[in-house]
Length: 357
Image 1 (cartoon, rainbow, N blue to C red):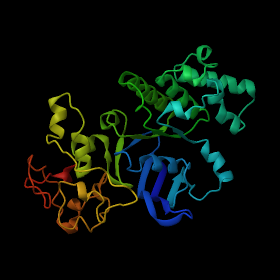
Image 2 (tube, rainbow, N blue to C red):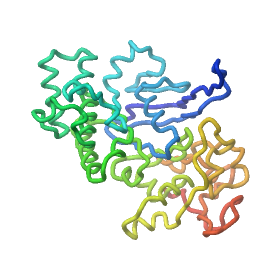
Image 3 (cartoon, rainbow, N blue to C red):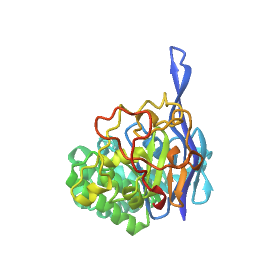
Image 4 (cartoon, rainbow, N blue to C red):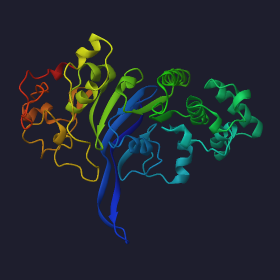
């Protein structure tokens, strides 16, 4: 059952110039995203920096107001609710940010940081809140006697992130958005934080939206993966389906960049795909398919057709004209040989049979 659903979600920021802030366009950070978060499960949101992942995450927990679209949480639409009406909902929607050093108030002790949501929502008295803070520290494997009175600057990166997770748990949330929660940590610490998050999910039945650019990490965390590019989801599939039968050219490029440690892993994406150029600015989204200027598999029409998310099967969608029945649905071709100069048409090769995914 879906705990949260987003339908055609849009977030545009006005682009202004001059002393009087004359509007000259829009920054299309999120541009028509629809997805569902299944209760008790983890959906990963991946893509390059600038693809709109964090903006989408902030909208889902109503830290940002959408420009358009709908958000439904636990069967109730929360899109246009005023702040007073959102207050009970905010207790159930929490967020853990990327950099714990900047998300924790350096002037407050750990006790005060974790206690803050309880104070804001008028939960319990001082003694009850202290017991709750101590319980939360134990849940994130930090001894209360050692950490209650400490300041963030005296903590390691992993300890700061554990405090941030404890704060997010304070109000018994149902959904937590994890915005690159391990990217600022060493690899060994990352593994411990991921193990902690998985244990907490099992204990409390939590639902996670896990935002990351690290696909190798995502494979060990998520039940399903949504790949985002310039404000749109270009592929959405169960995790193993996406890793074993990636269907969008952008997904294949991301997967080909993952370091492999076994022949089995290397066989999943045997070709090395190097994308041309950088991701464009969301203020200047290319016409047609936004990915076509960097796509090795583009065909005539990609520069003018805006593809929809096409179902490859009931649980797997791809936003690419190569899977559109009206275009003949040829599927994804192989990567051209190194040094090939033909970038205008589809590379020569046997089409991938994506329809058995």
